[in-house]
Amino acid sequence: MSKKTASTILQLIVFLGLGVALILWRYQAINETEKKAMFEAFSHVRWWLGVPILVIGFLSHLFRALRWKQLLQPLDIYPSVPNITFSVLIGYLANALVPRLGEVAKCTVLAKYEKVPADKLVGTIIAERAFDLVCLVLILFITLGLQYNIIYPFARDLYMKLFTDSSGNFIWLRIVIALAIALGGILAIVLLYRKIKNSKVGHIIKGIGEGLKAIGQVKRKGVFLLYSLLIWSMYTLAVVVGFYALPETEHITPLAGLAVITFGSVGMIATPGGIGAYPVIVAQVLLLYGISEGIGLAYGWVSWAAQTAIVVLLGLLSLILLPLYNRNQNAKA
Image: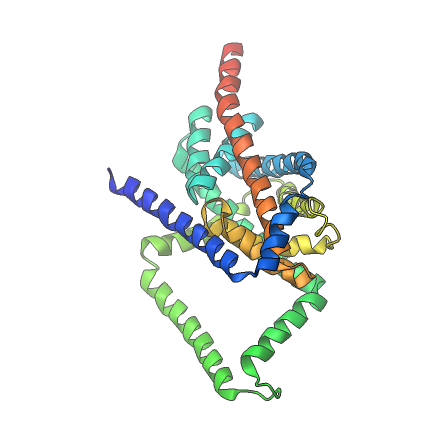
C-alpha cells in the first residue's frame, strides 16, 4: 500500500470517527423527552417534498457547472455543458466519501472526456473555492444584519455568562484573559504564517489569493456573479423547503435558512458528507428560533439525508450517463 493510499484511508477513518463521536455525544447529552420528540418527528416527515428538493439540488449543481465553465474560458477550454455538469456531480459523490477528493475527481473526469490537461483545471478549482469562501463570509454578515434581534440576545446572554457574575458585575480577570488569548492568537497566526509561507500549506494559502485574482480575468463578470447568487439561493431554498418536511419546523422564517446554510456549511466540511457534524450544528442553530434540540436534530438528519441522497443519486447517474453521452457524440462525429 502506497503512502498516499494509506494517508487517504487514515483521513477517512479520522473524519468518520469524528462524525460518529459527534452523534454519540449529542445523543447522550439530550434528555429522554428530546429523544422521544426526535424519533416521533421522523414518523411525521413529508417525504414527498424530496422531489422539489431534488430539483432544487440539481439546479444548484447545474449553476455551479456553468460558473466553472466560465472560469475555464480564459484558459481556452470550452467543455460541453453535459460533460462539465456530470463532472461536478461525480465530484460531489467523491466528496461524500472523502473530504476534498471531489475536487481531484471532477478535474480528472473532465480532463479525460474533454481531452485537456488536468493540471490546467486545478487553478480554477482554487479560484472557485476561494470565491465560495468570500460568499460564505458575506452571507454570514447578511444573516447577522437581517436577524440582529435574534442573534444579539443570544450573543448578549453568552457574553453575560462568560464575563459577569450572578449580580451582573464584570469579572475583569476573565476579560483580561480573553483579550490576552485573542492577542496571542493573532500573534501566533502571524508568526505561523511567516514560518510556513514557503511550505506546502503556505503555497495553498497563496494559491487562494491567486485564485481570487483569476476571477478578475473572467469574461462577463455579471453572469459569473449571477451564477454565484443562484447557487447560494438554491442552497437556501432547499433548506427553506425542507422546513416544511416536519410539522414542527414548517413555521420557521425563511431567514433562518440563511443561518442554517451559513453554519451548516461548516458541518459539511468537517466530516465526510457532513455526517454527524451537520445535524448537530443545525440543531444548535435552530435553538435560536425556538426549536427544541430533539426536533432540531430530527430536521438536521432529514436535511442531511436528503442532501446525501441527491448527491448519491445524481452522482451515480452521472457515472452511467457520462460515457454514454460521449460515445454518442463520438459516433456523430
